[in-house]
Length: 471
Image 1 (cartoon, rainbow, N blue to C red):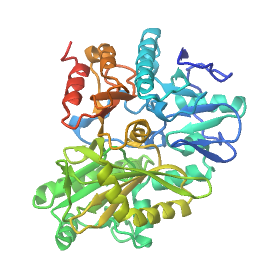
Image 2: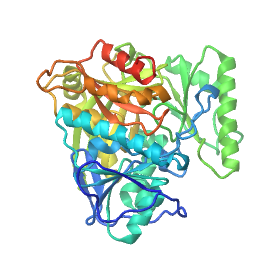
Image 3: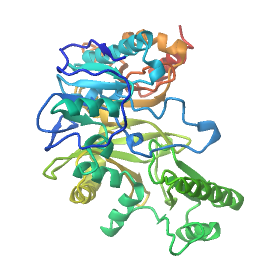
């Protein structure tokens, strides 16, 4: 069952049912790419369909190995609500819902939450004239639509599943979504990255990696106190494990766990658990109580032109998992002044390798004044919506995001309470919130941007509301 949610403007002519059809990977879009705002739109003609397809939309994507952080029942599903901030006017946003959630009651509630997000942006001055349709399988839906006639597609991630295996931008995005590919490309260009050990079956036929003792020795040689085991394809800090080298038992345990996972996956012809090992950087700066790890977003146009849009300071949980971002305009200006040329160089390396569209690059800032490049996310990033919000605020307004809250069943019924905290242009210094990703059901993520809330009082209050603690 497909459900249409009314958010102003008539939808494009073609509609589809939400039922699943056979999985396909075909070139859906022919032609070029246009950047509209911060969004990349592929194709030359037809109505625009907006799809959310993060790294999970690849054949194999991010998972997590810890018992207390298992991937939830619906976490592997592509979403769509976070695309509102970027959707071109007149487009149709396809929002994927698990089949058992495609009921009239659930989609009506998801539609109300999406409408709340629309209203929060409208209060900010961001007028979005778009439509929404809930579907069971986003990839199958857009495939069926494309087979009916020309379309333009605005994807979060230009994946080969959406754009086709021969699409140049999709192939480049798939390549660099694999973290070792980015590290190798920068190393070849003489750009600083962490010391990294890649899978090497020729020299290490038993496991593909040096022994735990050799890895510890490498860290000690660098003056580091930790090793990081990282999935080659992951997102939001999942698929990353930090291991202190002072505890050899933990190093050996982690080594065995990761190698076993990889070998088991490969026995099933899967590269999902392919991984690399990085030596922790030495002399890392701290900012706002976290590791100073800015995320730089920008776009690469079809002709290779680079436009750097924003520098955000990342927020972390347990020093690993990304939970949001902080915008400090003074920090941003100083960072770009000091490192702008180096950032341009990295974007040019990506452009030369065919990467196009919206890009996020994560770095670590060091006490020496250097920066070390960690990874690239060739897609819309967690801080991308902040750029849209900032464009409608007085210059220098404090802005913080939180991507980590998942409303409870009670909390999701409390969503309407957020209206009282929407931005008020007549009181621009008042703490306010913008909903940049609406939850589809209880337990689904909500992304929030907090304005004028440096002490996090409003953030804590809304988190209580969404956890069902406040009435």
